[in-house]
Length: 362
Picture (cartoon, rainbow, N blue to C red):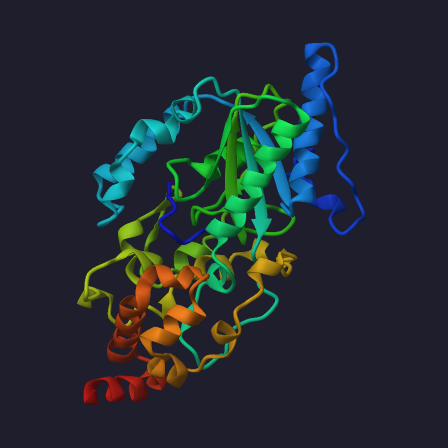
């Protein structure tokens, strides 16, 4: 089992709303009808069409229940220290495994997914940045969509209690995505869809609405493939769909707040400066990935075009201006400089040596 720590990491039946993407589709206003079943059908249809209208690619719905199996696995993962110094993951344990603790009276968990796969890639001579951080901060983009979603529910259906979450809250969103029929959890801990791979942000909306539930995704299409396990630069992906977060490059380059990165990681970062996509890049299912339609996730020019020298010469003032709406600001200027120096000093790739030499002279 793996859990989000700032980097994100999806057979769609009626839950696949992306099938009509690109068509002129207006959302009908389904007002409550007489009869519980009629309401449930109408409300479910409205939920899925609203998801599409707001730019989400997938929408699935699961019945609220306590995640007892996940609770056990999460407890084991935490007890083994696989969360590293991310002590916040020990907090709100009951909230993570019981949606009714987050939303009293909750009946349904709506899972929403939006593609972030970039249509452009970075300059080859630049330290690598995870694709999720190419554009604007997804937390803000998706949070605004969730607020619009809830407003639509109130305006059309009436009094609805609900809360929206984007991976920073105590919700096991990948488990709910699988229970909503959207995909399976791969060996790398990511949710994978047969249609488009795994480059998706996942959000959840927990509500007291009584809706029609999608069938859980029952199959695992990873088969005997172990490419993600074999390719992980730091051997953080273990058997049994367990990811040791304390060994993940994303943890070291984003979540670790210490001044120095452990020396035992030297030579293992494969040029990753912010996050890591290796386990997704090698996944065969991601050959089906297509560029995102979400304008907010259009890559920032500097992310695509910056060279090694540009990153080295970047000032804190410029960093704050360029990346003010970017997930990259999570590492802060000092974290990016630390990561650059680590790559320069410890990397085996000669292209980083000029940066290291300059750093020593300063």
